[in-house]
Length: 238
Image (cartoon, rainbow, N blue to C red; front, side):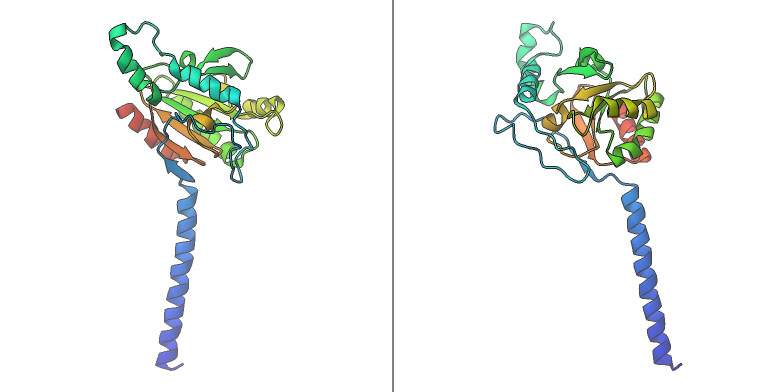
């Protein structure tokens, strides 16, 4: 083999090694990263609110009903603290659009409650929107349950099941709960509140609220264990 052919062969081999390394490197990066990290903001728009939510391959076909929209608006207008004095009323109203509203919720066991009866102002909250049939939800759930146990004294975890009564049924979510949840897991049946409030059509979706009840971080897609832990530690450090 002459020198030119040998050099050409070496160059080709180097190119192949680079491409193979880039391929596997990208695959590992994708595996360890959520589909989309985003800054969640509460939906305060008064425009068309009953349009069908467009979905990706793992999102539920969910129609945001007028009842959901009206409930969210009513809850958003209510003060978290009913004892707020008149002198503080203006400040409370100004903060209303940035604080998670006290929406009515139904626990998996059928018990009626509200968001701020489950959560505790002054304590960070992790919201996870999931469906039993969603593969990324199934994949990340053990890490979320583990984190909910590890941080149970410092952070409230609330799991919202994206319920449509068709693809997601009570039998399906109950079977999911038996497989993944423990006795302390807070799971509620969600008719579309989280999708509407945070303008998300992705499953899973994770929203992190600070001690004031304000959304400060979020992820669309599966959240790796280390990413979740770092996000929680950041919440606690604020």
